[in-house]
Image 1 (cartoon, helix red, strand yellow):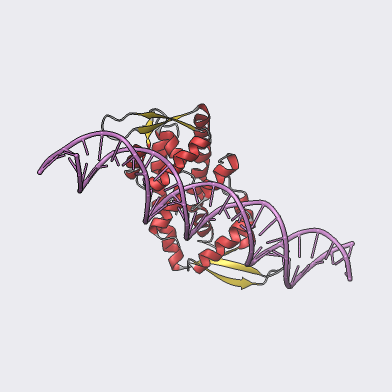
Image 2 (cartoon, rainbow over the protein chains, first blue to last red):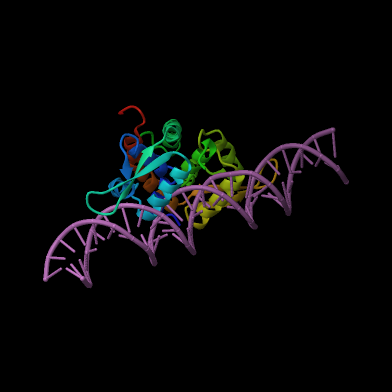
Length: 114
Length: 114
DNA sequence: CACAGTACCTTGCGCTGCAAGGTAGGTCCA
DNA sequence: TGGACCTACCTTGCAGCGCAAGGTACTGTG
């Protein structure tokens, strides 16, 4: 039911989309680039089958906008950028995340007050 | 898609079960008690429809054990306690959580190190 | 006895992450 | 030219979890 990989998967839920928003906050990025970058993040690695549907959802939600850009070598890329709505959603998440993190730290005790 | 309540719901995913494990770590507790206690935790409030199936899953996983205890007033209660397997799962989660939390903090930037 | 309160559980749904499969354009080299 | 390989995009079907809503049963009170 919840072995090591399942654990990481469950933790990702609901957080991944905001990590993606944060990654395109300062600079436009394209799908495959995000897959590679997330692959290097411990606990957040996600494949194409996760990222592409996620990007589509965020686009439909009006949080991301995209534009096609020719690649210097290879097929064209769809670059994603943050919309004003996406920025405010990200800000909202940041506030919620801080509170959530504190609650979990206090409840499960990260080991400092055991 | 992901408004305020949806956001909190998604964050809960995968974390709630370990918060429950932590809550019965030092003392046996029963279902309704856990529902009430979680109700007071910001970002973790969960109803009966969430907690009871969760407790059943944890029991089937061998992480929790339960015993029926007569109540001084009202129907009997099913008290839950941590098994050795549950304790090791909780320890595993603690390690995973710290890493995950750090990754998210770094990626989305909680504002302190922006 | 009816009613309210406590405590347990189940059903059906929606959302999300994922593995697997599929399309198409570009590059390289023989 | 043609085939192999890479890049980059997207879709389908499945599984798990949280949840609202609905349901059962026991206890105490007026």
